[in-house]
Amino acid sequence: MNIYAVGGAIRDAVMGIPVNDIDYVVVGSSAEEMIALGYQPVGKDFPVFLHPQTHAEYALARTERKTGIGYQGFHFYADPSVTLEQDLQRRDLTINAMAQRVDDTGAGVGPIIDPYGGQKDIQAKVFRHVSAAFAEDPLRLLRIARFAARFPNFTIAAETQEALRAIVQSGELSALSLERVWQELDRGMRSAEPLRMLEVLLETGAAEQFLPQPLIAVCKSPQLKKQLANDFDLLAANKVADVDSVCAVLLADLSEDAIRQWSETTRMPHGTRDFAELFSALKKRVTQQDYSAGDIMAWFNRADAWRKPERAEKLIALAGVLGFQVQRIKAGLGAALAIDSQAVIQRLSATEQQQGERIRSAIDAARLQAVEAITAT
Image (tube, rainbow, N blue to C red; front, side, top):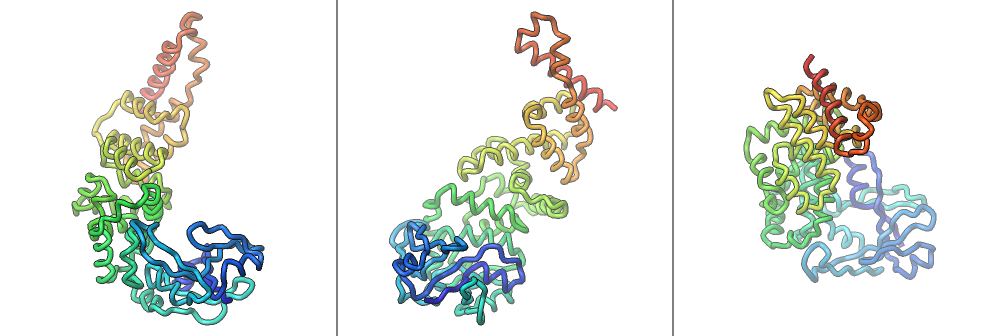
């Protein structure tokens, strides 16, 4: 049998990008032989095995045939007769359909095997699908969209654009699990230019399936899109790349209802959703010409700043990265957090100390007074 490193590891090596994960393909072997050699089987849908020492994943070379709907509607065929070229042909893009033989230590030996022109497309900075089977898997549309966000200087080949539109027209995007949709969107938002992912969804006609209407309107407006691009540039310049912050900036001009609705249709984690809602509310506050200490306190309470001060501070810092004047709010939060709740309670009468609502009211009043004192200067 022969073992090859394949896919993204070879692509990244050719592009001079640090390689983190390596996928291995085994050609000319069987499940029985792999087990006899000490590999542990873990694959459910197709034969994947863990190396007995390194525990890296090794998959038998395989072909596939469309048998159902969606990205899981495939029958996989793994056999010692399946060639490396046949295995590579089922992959999505030419730049991901390259391989290199490895020795017993996992080190690459010999030339890069590139039957479908991946190196040429890397040089030309083009995303090009390998075969007509590309359009059979609806998940590939989202993969290409987030690849475009990771490699924004690449263009999509005209024939691949047509294949992506064919996926949209097939209606199979609706067969994707919401969890997998969010996984791809999440990875795109963590990439170099998240806005490029949205552009691909718009260009292929898939935006209606995956994006909220208000966000589509933003992306279609040259002025609003330019502002969003500027905001993302500020995030990049300040090395802000966590998905909560990126998603919050992306959705900052949407209503709470729109954000919540989109979170439900994408399985967005609740923490990410809450962060986006709170940032949207904060942006509306700081873009007003005049806001009171009471307005600031209302946002602190909504953000649960008393139990989650780190999140409130992160939200305020994010607004500062985008150029909003948040000094008053930042100072007000510090003053409010400095209030000694126990000291406030001790100043109440014995009867009042037994009344939860009275205690909360007294603490709120003390915090508001602190915020007023800071923000009035």
